[in-house]
Length: 193
Image (cartoon, rainbow, N blue to C red; front, side, top):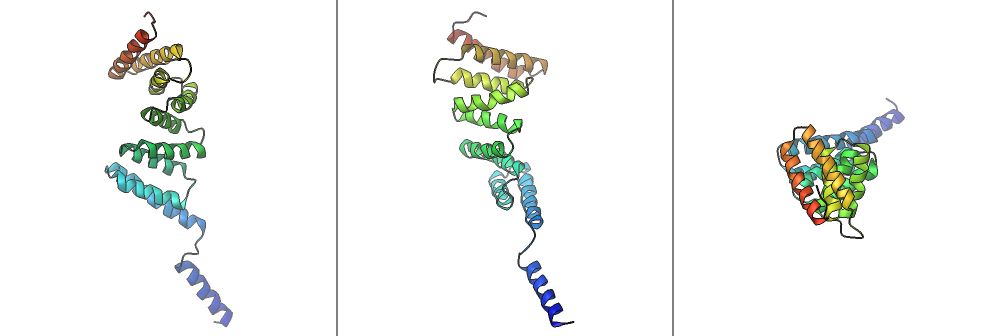
């Protein structure tokens, strides 16, 4: 083998062994960490899942599903602020992801960020008009919104729509819970049934 051939072989071996790898290899590693995060989440080991998803995101920061699953892990750890940040990144990367928008709106409700919840959930109910949970969460956000005039009619409309959709899906417990909020809203806003 010639001196140039030996150098080329040594350089190729060096690159292979010490990390000057193509982007696809780092993405495969990102996928490995993502899959490990999924496995840990299924096992209820959410702290470890968070670490795995963060490692996956570190290797492929544009992987929407890794951000989404990171948010779900935070939500399971009852860390709504961290979940909101991860859901926000998901929506930033994939604005049309209605599951991420719904989840973000739901987390905003828990954080009592009513205006932000309304913004996300409005998008969802306009694109998925048969989404009972989104209508219920939107009605709840409108019900609790305190800046400016109350959205009386939007509270009633969304809560009624949620009840109807829950009933259609035979989700009677959810319908009854939503009905209690609707009854409170009717009294609060002086509406007759």
